[in-house]
Length: 203
Picture 1 (tube, one colour):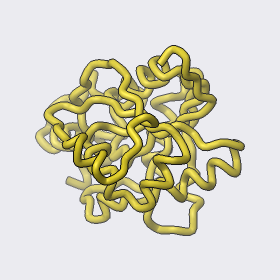
Picture 2: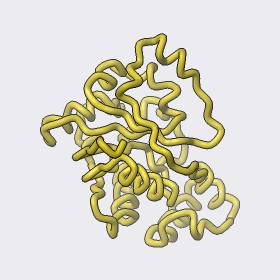
Picture 3: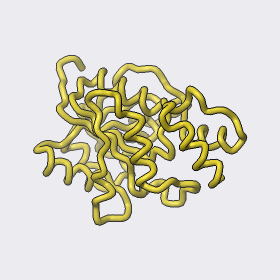
Picture 4: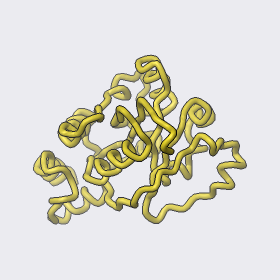
């Protein structure tokens, strides 16, 4: 992948809440895939998480992200999905808006869990033909690559950077708070107290 360079990439998710796993994955992906500017894109409402409980507002999640990445160069928190007319966050719509703003389609960064269901995404063929996809490993995730190929996925436009599995999840953070366990080291120190205060009152 040393011969590939990307001016922009997007790393999307609900970030409910953001944690150190997100920060580490974003940094590793930026380095491994030679990305100049990595856009962190919190979803308005994920089409796969429309019934998610304990969801912090977009503004809260956006501010937590901003505090978490504020000292890192080459990262920008984007509110592109908040400004969209659609209530549901569809990646192909996000990419279309970003292409108008940036002048090109950004690289799309997703985990193996999302990649396994990629052919269920709305207008996935358009995404696959328009840009590259970078897939990072997730713990305990398996998927049928042959099935994806049989559905027409172009694997020549999919990148698999070599990086460690970072096994921290937002669910884990919420559960630790609900069990009155420390989240020190699991989340950026700049937002630790905010997360404890918020999720203690919602779980």
